[in-house]
Image 1 (cartoon, one colour):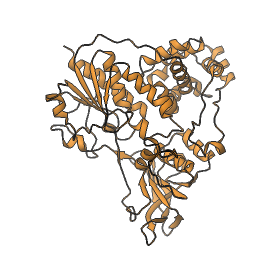
Image 2: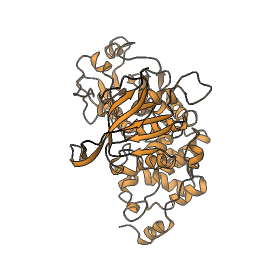
Image 3: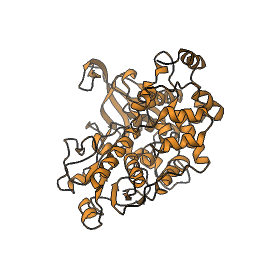
Length: 468
């Protein structure tokens, strides 16, 4: 049972708020929205942790960070030791501290959240990671090299996590990345104002390299080289497929082929990876004066907030209510603060264009919620004779993604399910001996931290598979 005096004190202090850019200012720039904690704020927030004997926060962390231990070190002012605790389980702490949905995972299980506000675990993780990076990082212990080669397909969160754990175990690890920069969704999918690339993402990738992991970019596994060739020609003894889910989905409604219709993937990749938001960049990006973003997940929020910063008036179109929005509450809150309009219980039925083939309106129908569907959410039902039009110059579809089928099609014996996801067990083992998979390539589009957890489990399974 928790010490009642500690519990009362923690509840009395209350969660330390995080400083942020003013909404009116940040709506016009790509600088990071949240400033994070300073040392004084981190020490105060860390003092709220009860150091539970049975820490549910650890149980609900997909990568198993020893949360009470690192927070205890923060509380003592031992920030470098706190970083060391985190580094033993996470290769991307500054990333996770910014983009993980802590409210549904570690913080969602915090005992302080039962009656009040949970400990700001994510903000403390971010503080420790940023502090440690400014001090040059922490050295990580590695086992002696064993000379066994393991290939990683994809340098996103699952691939980086798998590579880190295997490198620490002494394996000779090479990551093959299809794009010109490593990082996967961290580079192309998450905007600069949520996840700075040069200041946060690239240093964390460098920390993976520092473990001895090699990263080869511009390699299309399935075209440049096949998985069979990785085994037979290159001498790899195991392969982990963490290629993500980058194939965009569309609605299949009339007008989707008009000029000015984009997938969120294309829009965000141009802006993030190719830095089209920077006026000095040579990458073109089209943004209309009035943009509709279709969808309600984190990717929809990212696309909408990016378009806003590029000068558009933005409307998010979602077929359920705000209560059912799958995006993080923090992202929805920020979008509303910045002036993005939400049209709820609204579903597109057609994209309209002018005589030159450019979008000029989105025809929608109003919806109402019926009985719950297979996911447990109430099914949206069209309301008869309720169609209306929203004048727009561009439409961005943010409806989810599927894995690219290339690897499955070029790898004999690799089983996939009907949506194209690779079939793998809990450890990441696939139907093909020696081939493991995890992250979005297996689950479809999910979160960074879930992908990292899959990468870590696969690393343990690969080690068990290869160890004499």
